[in-house]
Every structure is written in C-alpha cells, then in structure tokens.
Amino acid sequence: MKNYCFWFCTGSQDLYGDECLSHVAEHSREMVAYMNASGILPYEVVWKPTLIDNALIRKTFNDANADENCAGVITWMHTFSPAKSWILGLQEYKKPLCHLHTQYLQEIPYDTIDMDYMNEHQSAHGDREYGHIVTRMGIERKVIMGYWKDEKVLGRLASWMRTAVGVMESSHIRIMRIADNMRNVAVTEGDKVEAQIKFGWEVDAYPVNQICKAVDAVTDAEVKALTDEYYDTYKILLEGRDADEFRRHVEAQAKIEIGFERFLKEKDYQAIVTHFGDLGSLQQLPGLAIQRLMQKGYGFGAEGDWKTAGMVRLMKIMTEGMKGAKGTSFYEDYTYNLVPGKEGILEAHMLEVCPTVADGDISIKVVPLSMGNREDPARLVFTSKTGTGIACSLIDLGHRFRLIINEVDCKKNEKPMPKLPVATAFWTPRPNLQTGAESWIICGGAHHTAFTYDLTTEQMVDWADAMGIEAVVIDSDTTIRGLKNELRWNAASYR
Ligand code: MN
Image (cartoon, rainbow, N blue to C red; front, side, top):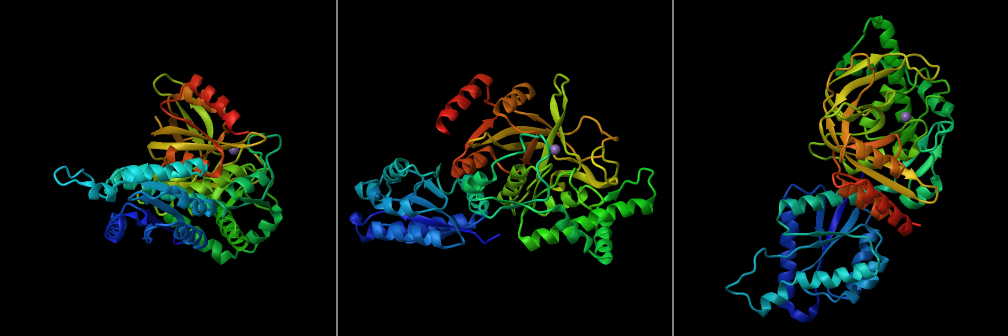
C-alpha cells in the first residue's frame, strides 16, 4: 500500500486582518502537530496554508487530487469563510472529504471574551456556512464534531481515515476468478461491470489450468521449505493417519500456496475465488493454502463468490497495520444453536477461514472432503476470538447493490467439537438470533459473509455512502417493522 496522508485545510478570509490570519495559521499548525503526535491516527496529517479565496481553494483541491499519496482532505473553518468561494474547488475535488467541526479553544474565556475573540474563534458560525454549501452541492463527506484534543474525536478521525483509504484503495482491488459461480446458486452471482463502475473492482476469470501450471512449476525444495515452516508453526493432528502420508497431503497445500501466490503477484490480483467443482489438475481443494493467503491480506470467496472476495480484501485494507487487530475473514453461516439463552450461529466453511481470527492453537488436520472428487485436503483448524464484530454481505438486487451489516457478538463454543475438522466461530447476531436472522433474510443477505472484529458499522456505512450504494444496518436497535419500512424508503431512494 501507498504511504497515505491526509491534508488539513483551514478555512478563513481576509476580512479580519493579518494578525487574525497569522493566529489562524499558528493554531492550525499546532493542531496538526498535536494530532500527529497523539499516536491515535493511522496516517499522517499534512498542514496546508489557510484557504482564504476561490483561487487558492480551487488550486489546493486540485493539488490534492493530483497527489497520489493524499487519501483525503480534512477541512475546518477557524473563522468565517464565505462558502461560495469553495464551490469550484469542491466541484473539482474527487477524494474523500472530512469536515472536522472543532474549535481551537475548548472553553469560552468568560472574563476576557470580546468581539476580537468572537471573530477569531467562530467555527460554530463558519462551519455552518461551509457545511451548507457541501450539502447543497450533494457532496458526500464525513462530519466529525468535538474538541480536537479529545481522544474520542481523534479516534473517530482515525476510523474515518481507514474508511477513506478503503475508498481510495477500492479501485485498486483486482479479483481473480479461477472458477465460475457454483451452478444454480443465486446470491453469489452479480453484475461485474456494475461492480467496476461502483467500486472500481476488476473481476477477471482465468482458466483453472493456467494457475495449475504455476502450481506445477513450484520446486520440491520450495515445497519442503514451506512445509517445514507449517510444521514449525502449527500443531500436527495425525489422528491415526500415517505421518509420511499426512505430510504428503500438507505438501500439496504448500505447493498450491506458493503457486497461487506467485500467479496472483505476477498478474497483480489481490483477491481470489475458487470452486470445489472446478479444480483442474489440482490435487486438493485449496484449503490451508487459501487460509494462508487470506492471512497475508488476500481477499477470498468460495464457489465463485467474487463479491465476498472483494469485501474481504477491502476490509483487510481498511484494517491494515491496526494495533491490536483481532482479524478479518470469509465465513459462511452454517448451523444454529436454538437452545433458549444459548442461541447463535456456528460459522465456518468447508475449509477456508482466515487464521487471523484464531484464538489459541492452530492445528493442521487432513480429513476427507464430502464434496468434489479430490484427495483429502489439509486445513488449518482453530476456534476464534470472542468480542463484537461485524458480518457484511454485499448483494446484487438486479439493478443495484446493497451492503448488509450485522453487528454480532462472538462467543466461545460451549463445548469442543472434536469431530468437526474446520475452523469455526460462534456468534449471536444483534439484536438477538431471531430478529437478527429474520432481518438478514428480509434484507436478502447471503450465506457467505465478510467478517471483521476490527471495523465498525459506521466505517462500513461511510464506505457504502462513498460508493453510492445502499447500506442496511442490523444492530441492537433493529426491529422488523422499522427495517421493512427502511427497505421500502431505500427502494424509493436508490433506484
Ligand atoms: Mn460456501
């Protein structure tokens, strides 16, 4: 990824005299320095000279467009800045925009306040004028209100920066399909041309045997080295299998991992889609290999599901380098526990769950696959972390996309499941299993999800807004009646 930064642009005008303008510049410099030193922001903020007229505003926004490291502009009106002077710049600006509605001083200086103070510290006034024109022009932007030293405010700015990078990087997501959609499955289908128009995603198909050739070209020495690494990293659960035979199965996945990664890098793709029914000359369904690629940041979707692959990649980008990140993965809603008080969904897939979500030991198992016609695949097996997360499903409604975001509470499995040879999570959707699942189905959500512990609903809604698509949130406040009305209103809005 690029070394992204964000520009901090302070608005004012020349009505208040040079002394006031020098204070404005001084204050905004101090604020930028503080924000950068806070350790809260994932990307650097770059101070820009105070914007006081049409020409400079237009030039600054166009410079921001042209600077490939700039992922967005943060605007703030320290004083009043007549908003007509922002029209041309805003019209030509193409990147994410944040309006930080803050004020240099936290408290009204009751004993000394006079009209000079009021003229200098009037973002309550100037930010409204500026906000008006952005709204009138119909420009999507994030508004964050609060004191600039407040950790919560900086935390929201940090979150928005990750969303903005997601918006910028979305158009660099290239998804490789090495199989078509699973026959007759509806929800994994979609309009790839529209996805490129809306999200910038490039979705391309490759004949499976072309990637098989890349796998065949991997040398024995390379396979041995990576298999040794697996054996050093993971627990080996032979479960009665012969140790040499077991290792040969693991080696097949090492060969796939190296071959696939080489092919993806050579062709410049950051997400991949497979299908157990279309494996060409591959010995096994890619299991462990795909799990490792997801861990490295690749997006993945099974059975030809390129939309989920794109979402997993997007969420990997948005969480990149996050301190204390708990993980992002592809999942499938599999089986319910309907016991009162213990309701939830067991999440898994045939093989492909990302090890970033793992809690504790990760083991390798070799077990037959009940589908397809290949040898028993090696896979990484683990349980996942507890805590809140979001499960996202991007669906194609035929004439438009909808992003469904469900907040979920991840829990420990009540008991071990020694006979289940796949990685799992167990979660209860909000507001509860019944309303959560009913809502998901009413929204048309898929059985595949892109899941993360590390992003918020707000971030994904902001991303969807930036892409111009509908976002539906299922959370603690969701009621079926409210949701159905929201979908009706959205149907009128997103035509
Ligand atoms: Mn599936």
